[in-house]
Length: 184
Image 1 (cartoon, rainbow, N blue to C red):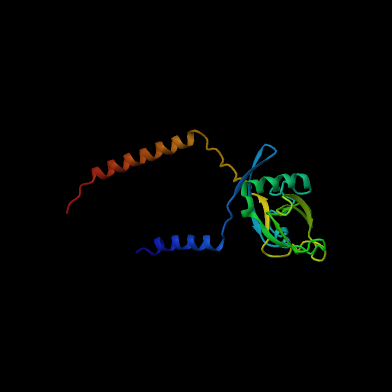
Image 2 (image 1 turned 45 degrees about the vertical axis):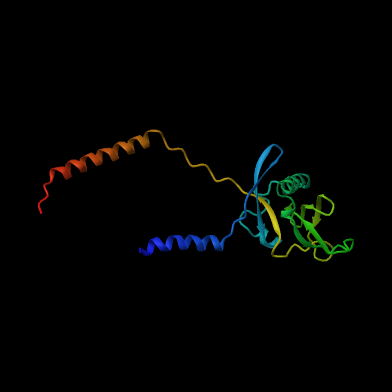
């Protein structure tokens, strides 16, 4: 068996295993459709990515109301399956845990999330002494998956010229082969 034929599927399988992707969820906010995905990591990890907020991947950044709209729409689309356990150091929380949907970062230390305990969105602060620990490496942060840029249009005559050249070459090759006499 050809080694190349075996190595390509194996390489693709290893690449997919090393970089698992999160399924996109399409939600509508303000009449616009958005493909929302998750980044899993700490707040420091999120702020270190190439498209870190503020960027077009975080349209709700600096707008708690818009972040709340996104958080509600995402929870409606995904339901309880999107909830994650977050440690809460706020003295007013007797259990020390919150069950929140993916977090929508609105500043360098605040976020909005759907809170299952009150069935609404709330603004939270990242503070490991009085509020939420945001440096846990397994937190799901929401971001908007940007659409791939559309391919540049090809001018109309180019495909036609290419087809004509290929046809012409094949005819010349056929004439040359038929003109040769093969002897065995």
